[in-house]
View 1: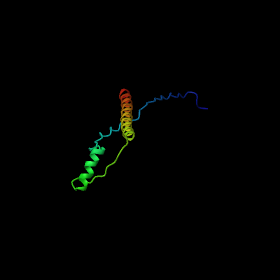
View 2: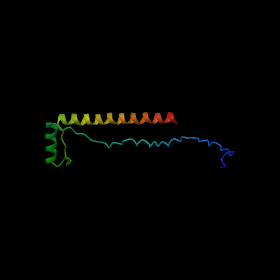
View 3: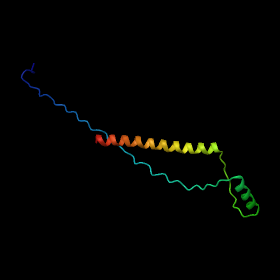
View 4: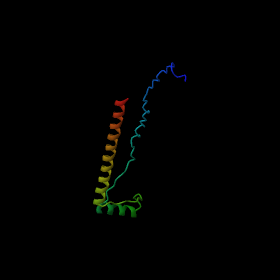
Length: 103
């Protein structure tokens, strides 16, 4: 039937890989802490404060107290937060460097 004599040219298939664009979001801005004023109240300073308060010479403030253990816990929590952020920053830096090598 008529397929003898006709030649079929082979089709060339080419595969091209185009990597997806990598998105590197900017690092967040640095933390700007607000000033915290500390005043340590001891029995002596508290006695003086109460005397000044009764005489109308002291500012009226609300004071928050921490036990020694509570202050230690607060300090440890802040140190742990600093450690976590430092490790997170190292991980981000590591992956950015890998991506730069591939590009």
